[in-house]
Image (cartoon, rainbow, N blue to C red; front, top):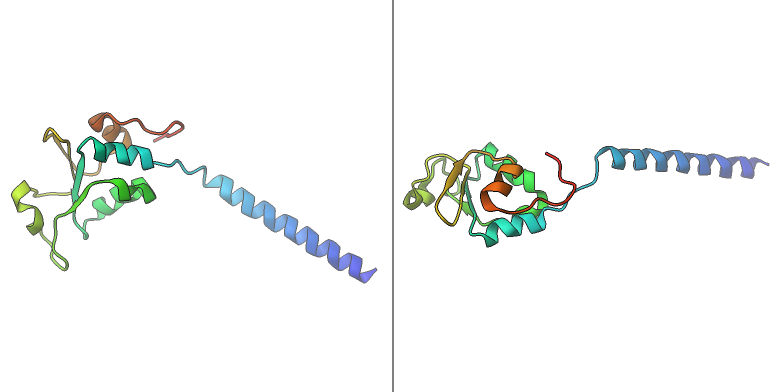
Length: 129
């Protein structure tokens, strides 16, 4: 009788834990993959200029998640530096900067919707800003 009671309690605890994990997963929402979107920006000639120390640059990278690896990114600051010494030939004086192949620039962190329009790249179905 005692063994049956213990098995029941372990099973019940596992069921409750599973429900908690499931609820937490659903609360965070589905993750939209941005790989194709990021690749489209790069394929169109798009470039993001930024620095390792810029919080807006980091936030912009975070907007893409793991898909940022597909973005053409140019680091504008030397390690340990706090300036734009690696991008002086591009006249970069603030970051982040998004640049199209035609030379149009948008300065500052951009919404993914703005980047979609700027580079004529479609956001994935189901993406909501």
